[in-house]
Length: 436
Image 1 (cartoon, rainbow, N blue to C red):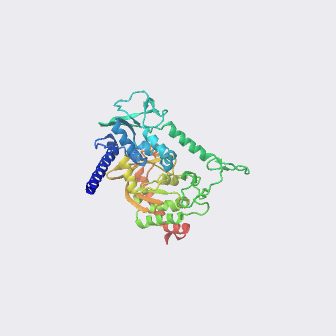
Image 2: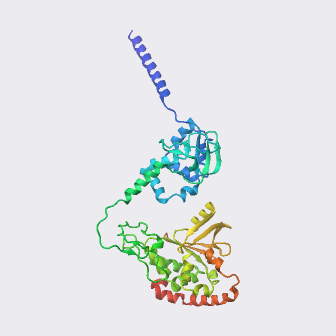
Image 3: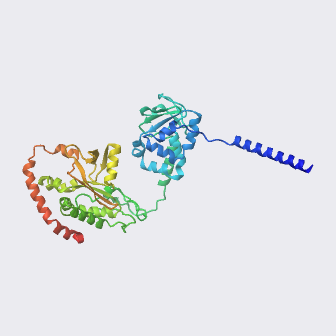
């Protein structure tokens, strides 16, 4: 009798256990299954790399996976340049801050409509961005690649500019306004900065190694003068970069490398650019030097170098206020075609493009190829050897085409040889331990 009771109780317990496990399996929510042919997978594998990276950073993959399993979606994908270059740098930093992930999500969801739109109609559409006020109107979208990617559960249109919802713009404006509010203490008579024609403000303390406070153009010396313009460097008067030593090193590297003595001569003897470059690097700025070789410098006529300030203007056009290596410049021209780099000769830019597996600078008549990559790279100064002297397109058009170049070439070479002969002597006298 006891065995029968125990057997009955065991059977009853086993039945409850099996039924409970079955019920638990039924109540579990299975994650949505995404087809490999989904529009979301196509976006991640498409040429809209900037948008796909932001989608991953915003942790939107799972919500979008759930959205495409419920209904078709239309994605308006901005071109990479719109997200990488055209976007305000301060606004982009605001979006990428960890505390502003909600704003980043809303901005990305504002580019997605929960329906299939094969053609764009000039009317308002509801987006995946939460909030009734966040509707996409017809005049906001400039489609440049309609029906770029078509899948069974959605479609992607390429657009020219980033769409910014009102809520995100308001959050950014509030953040910027809060930063600008500060108490002003009574001080003496205001001082005018002669370089910017604006009121001088007391510089805030800058941590060691921080980027410079002023743009590099404001820190440059006012004209071809030996007197450097005062500019706040990292940490105030105590510089954290030894720019003078780094400039000496790179000029000495040019001399040892061979074939760039004329450039070193101009930097040290004909101008005060070596001193100014050392000061800029000491204050935290970075420079890329496009260095013409001796053969290219020998083609310069005496008239081109004899005008007041001409050597400085020529060299300023070869100084890029960025740190670029041969690899970074080549990757840029391979990806974007033509790239314009700012130079220290405002407002002129130098154009770079890919040609014959290398980087070509300048325009057709006055172009130069990168022939000696990474002659000197130390993280602050980068020197790239080129086979021509670059001029802005305006100077190329003004230059007379019928000038007796052949007759003047011999004179130019004689002058160049004289400068080269005096290079080491004058460099040692001007810069101390330069040649040791």
